[in-house]
Image (cartoon, helix red, strand yellow):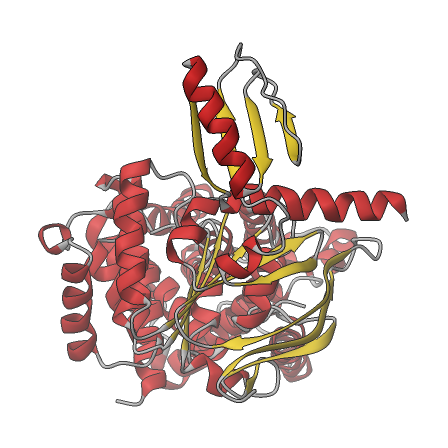
Length: 246
Length: 306
């Protein structure tokens, strides 16, 4: 394996495997958060919105995984000075972030496993639909990881960083119509929902599995917005994230 | 100088500092062997200099290189050869010493199998063979520091940065760590910052004194001693008669203890008369503490007179 492969593995081990191995209870929270929303929405809608809620669970899991990266990287950087230690090694920032980001996905694997089973039962998206869902989730994850890494490199205080992480998670995965169709929001406020990329992600997911009917223009717009936001955040992280401080 | 540490007018101004220079035109050249210790008060610029040399921070102006590799232009190549334990670095509590060292080696690009055996070997070298699988949170402060030293020890880096590695340790743990650092410096270049002047005196081949971002002295302990006029120190406890000193400086501390700095002949004369009177005192060559006080005090006086 190339040295960059081992550098990625280091991030995975530190950010998930070692913590999960030594403190298994840490996994419980990542499972509970998306599934608890799913349960509430399903009960309140008397089962009518279970499909949307499952897709919402996927989107929330991936977005929160990316945003958790911000808190975790900030914690490693400010409390353990790990980032400084790694900067003074041959490791690249890409290898460092990739390993840490995969670590975040490993954390949410139990939640994703439950959601995959529920999706197979209640959504049955088919092969093309499953790939479309996967693409949406990966774009969502890329956007949140890029945002999380950039913010973490600017942070100097872990309390502030965790507060930011929770705030952004709430703004983008709890408040917007991720667990239900955007049409449930009264019109003047619906425009606000479209400020969040997760709204577009939920629309694509719901359209892919036939839960909502979107015009082809709306669907293309949703893909373009989601792709553009992810690309923009990725470019910002490449340009603005501070690996070596200035 | 190709095989050495070289800084040319290195200056750092942090954004938001209203132009205050954390490092102010630091220039130095020294061979990259043994231990180079940076001493100075809080905020003197020690960590800023180390972070620039360890490629973690960009200088505002000036340049620096180690063994011919520029810290900015050749950072990638330099990172193959350096290892750093930053100031206030801590071990992750949810990891074991073996996992800590192993993951660090993976980040250095070493394969898993080799990294695992090197981690165990390095931990054994710092005397932690029986604690490799104990959670870091269960280890004492001194042992955690040893784990961090083991990370850089395990690497193949030949230039090691340690920023205040012994701060907060009890005297015995500190001396244990000194032994490790002295061993580490046998075949590597160690750049060490410390608040403990005794530590620099004990370990360093070359000492740099930073004050308000400026390098005010650089040399071996003997060379720094030579910058001070009086080479001998007599210490008298409180409530003792202060002897008459013809050529020297007398300082009375807050607790009433008296220090006399003077030349060798007068130090002998004074000690003879103190012995005759039965006065308790101690006499020694001036320490790095005395030199540091002299240099910093002199620098402050010069600034005030300007």
